[in-house]
Length: 500
Image (cartoon, rainbow, N blue to C red; front, side):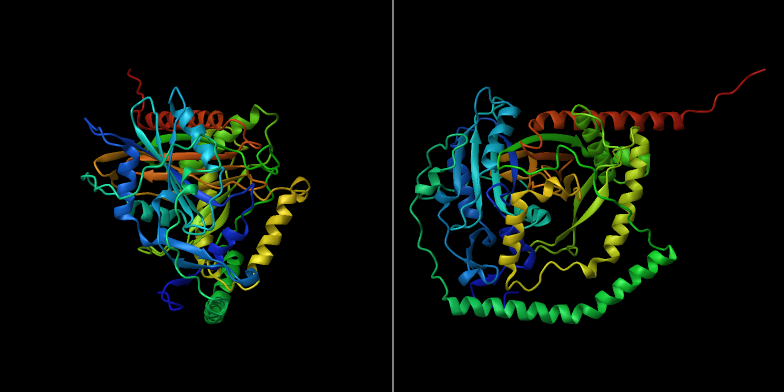
């Protein structure tokens, strides 16, 4: 609950870090590509219908706007304000021939463009021109506003779980198209709404001071629990009850250097029921299946560039810290290192190695939760984080130090039911995420209805052709599936007998 001011809310320490670490080469927004199947006989205006829908259903989180503190002494605060949808809804046409490749290329161009911090930090681009007749939306929102699980909550609030009629069109003029690759949207020329009155600097400093005081008090109250948890972890590892996660630095690859702002994007979908069958056959989790396929894909991809690293590739994987039922729009996640066992050629041997490592990581992360705060005092943090981002941007250290990890991987449980925008059914839901200096590849998957939708976000300096890597992932998954199903058939076959 907000106890600071009626319309002001401080950013958490983790939310603010995403703002401070942002640079022109590493924008910190995430997004999704949503594809829709039009109902028979649809003759409406796709952009006008989407705009009218958003005008009716816009949740409060999308009305929040940043207000910065004097001299950036602490992280900004959120202030509720008015929204002019002409500033947030764009239109773009997918180039001919209008296939998936052209859609992915256009989304990559749009994803490379940073959000304007003078407005609420989100943008929707209405896309048409698909040869299939489907329509699409590209939605991006700053990571300071939410994490992956909160994004799934937002999707449920924006869409319906059953078809419905379109609302009446709002009293706003439609926007002209945005040329592909343009950094200047038509929305930028729209008339600004009346902005909420900015609080004075003294009021802002009071909000920041109260936030930091509350966080210091919370940390003090939690110190005994944290120390007890740390002692328990040490005792558990010493006694053998907890298996320590043994990882060294990741091997250096073409994925792990300084990056530019140019992005690439590719998509893949896998049948969830089939993934679960593979998981049951191998006695592992569905996430282990995906991680094993990712390791296999990177084996194939890197083998074309030169000798494979002898050591396993390491993934930096997002782990949610949310309690069940928590729908708060703040980042509540941490990161963990996971081996992809990419040095193992056989997929069934690789999946068992991945499973052993992820199981140890999950147990350790669960035990260590009290040591992983997502909010902390923020006074002075913008300077510290900004200096860190600037130092990494110079990239000299990236060429000398071994990488901590090779790739970012995250898994999000999306809406279990089919979503609708008015009468239009969502048939595709691909995530788009962040890449960083030293990790130019992000592999994110969302579970939506009966499919796993995988989005590969790349820095083109690290992965020039994201589609090639997506093909490698499809091949690696097929190889794993064939091996798992062959083992299942062999184990189920009756023993042969010899007759006299």
